[in-house]
Every structure is written in C-alpha cells, then in structure tokens.
Image 1 (tube, rainbow, N blue to C red):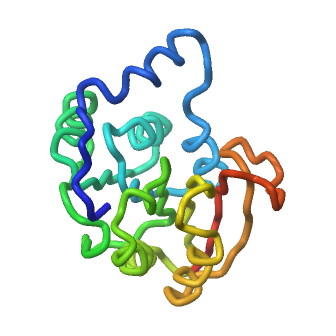
Image 2 (cartoon, one colour):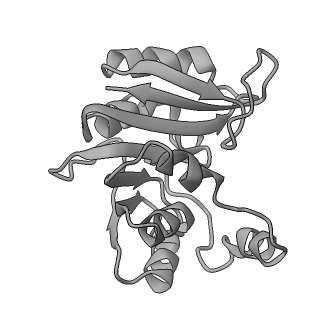
Length: 184
C-alpha cells in the first residue's frame, strides 16, 4: 500500500482472533493461495500477518510487506521468524520473484488512486513466469473492476479466475466483492 493507514496493529487482529476462537475458518485467503501449490508467496499489504503466518505454518516461504509500521510491529510480534518488510507496494523492489503475490483485504482500495497502477505493476514484477497475482477487494466504491483489469493488462497479467469470495463462490454481475487471479 502506499497510503499510511490509521490502523492500530495491536487491536486490528482482534476481530479475526475472536472468529477463530469461535471455531470459524479465518484462513480462506491462505487456503485459496495454497490451492495453487506455491513454494513462495509475497503477501502484499500483509497488515498484522494473518495470511502470511498461516501460509508459513503450512510450509510456504513467505515475505510480508506493508507500509504501516504499527501493523508490521504486530506481525513481527506474532511471527518473529518471518521476513517482514516495511515498504510502499507501489515502489517495492525486493530483488526476488515469487510464485504468488496475494493482495488480500482490499489492498488496492487503501492506496491513493494515482498509485494503484504502480502498485499492480510493482507487484506483478515480482512474479515468476506463469505466477499468479490474487487480489480481493470490495466493488462498491470508486475503484471498478474494469479499472483493475486495465492495470493488470498493462502489467502483463491475464485473468485466469474470478470469484465473489475467497471460498470461491461464483462471481456474478451483482457481486459486491471480487477475488481475481491473474497470471503472468
């Protein structure tokens, strides 16, 4: 993300912790990514690390990136052995490639509109040939799916799959959320 958020890294994961405590599955994003059998994943806009930590727990080499120092502090507290990078996704250059880049939790929507294209391009540049970028975000705001498709095409990505949830519910024209898989 390229905008600094107003999140509190210590309190942000409470909602997911409570749901997990009730026996709810809070790892739909990780499960979808794991279905692609990646060896390595860049978790862009990782926040407090919920997705990255679950991927690592299941044996994936994962790097979490976020611009928010408070969120990363919580991620580091929860999983000090993982690699956490404080950086702007619109300008990131990690010097390595990944099988999958995941942008869970409305990541493009947290970025200023002027940097969304750069965010997609920078993330796509971190994909191996044939790699996948998976992004999920709300569709009821000012960022339309057509806008996202346009920047993905410009970054050399082709749509492979789309669902309305991380659990792969079918995408319909009236869907208010999209999870899109684009391939390099």
